[in-house]
Length: 195
Ligand code: IMP
Image (cartoon, rainbow, N blue to C red; front, side, top):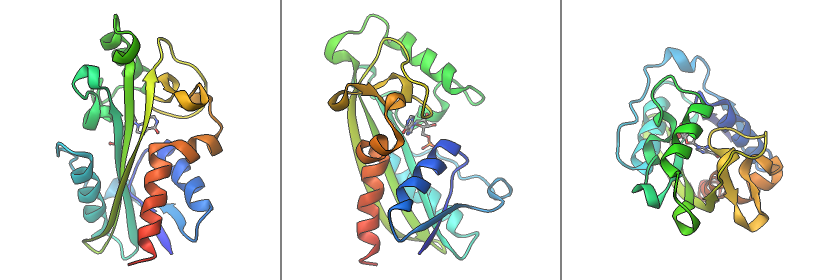
């Protein structure tokens, strides 16, 4: 089975390719993704955005489209950055800008106030119809300073406590095994058998 990923995020594409590598699914990005009218991710939940994105992009191809909406939720910041994780520091900001902004918001917060979780909702659709949706999360703590060179997004400040390493210090195999995206995608694949 082939899935086309509806995302312009190279970090996500790499992770999904690695995750699909262990399965019967072949994964590619949507050809000419930037020529397709963009889906407005304006819903207040990850689920609505993931499902909406998958349905929208599946109208432009006959293949099965995979989309996800994911982000970092910090309870001490009332759930921010949440569904706005990609746009937290404005539309043209870099990963470094977003990390810098979050570190600023976290200044003075210690102990349990630094708890955070990554959430991923992943969905597949074909020709405008949603086929399956699955979600999962990963619990961690925000570090005081970025650690590690690998990964993307907020990886360098998300300490995965079980392994005492930030996401950016984990091997790809370790991140894929424990991450919100890895767990959600494996759930999605278990649903695909049933479609
Ligand atoms: P979206 O799902 O494309 O709307 O964006 C999700 C945003 O959340 C990304 O741009 C990252 O900033 C962040 N994010 C989601 N998953 C991860 C991850 O595995 N590591 C680091 N940051 C992530």
